[in-house]
Amino acid sequence: MRLAVIIPTLGRREQLSRLLKYLGDQTRLPDEVILSAPDATHIELPECCSFPVSLVFGPKGSSAQRNTALAPSLQRFDLITFFDDDFVPSAEYLEQVEKAFAENDGWAVLMGRVVRDGATNAGLSWEDAEAALREAKGKTHAGPLVVDHVGAYGCNMSVRSSLVGDVRFDERLVLYGWQEDIDFTSRLRSRGRVVCVNSITGVHLGIKSGRTSGTRFGYSQVANPIYLIKKGSVPASFALPLMFRNIAANLAKSLRPEPYVDRRGRLRGNMLAILHVAMGRIEPEYILKI
Image (tube, rainbow, N blue to C red; front, side, top):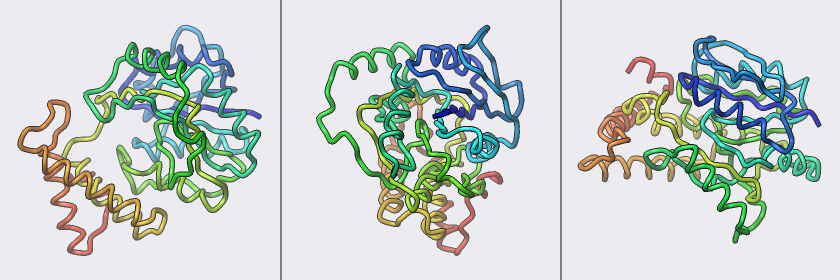
């Protein structure tokens, strides 16, 4: 199988360069790594790579950048793996992905288990990631090996190209694209299983640079789930609890917010989106006006 890695990136030149060097230690090298950015100023390449690297440029935003790289890749590769530029995969990650797809014809989407996620805290360092991966390698996961999901976590997800067809990331989910990964992969469930394989591991550093503002993100936390429910791509049983958990967290922590989260900005965005939804206005791209 031919396997490509697509990495959308924005404003993280040094982090991207380090990730490219790190991917050279994969036990199964990618056949190509495709970097998708608004322009060349966002990309720094290491002196040498063990695999071909290509660059594509287009509109800014997680959905748009993924689409810019995805469309020309579907006919060239059997498998496409999406990594965030702050995701650190285990050394066997791509080898395990290829093996899992080869052994399971009915799988459309696969993601690995995130053993530590800096998105839920102040963020992690490379040293944290390497330590977490060493620890995970020495342990057997207690739960089931394969778990079906509504959709995949976009920091690390792989798709079978032959099943993608005309499905694309929704570019109405602009900028950070909150839940664009779930929307895209959930729409592929009609074509094959969407699974997490717990023996395939990685760490999400959760770097805060390059993220959208607190108010914009808070707006997306409400507007995007409602939009996806109305669209029919994500079940309300998944989207509504997610939305209410985020509102509750922002409300509870706004009095004493974490230094690395703009809880009050998020709460303002939540309230504005709730007002718009009550008025019948469901417009994810409104964050461009905030």
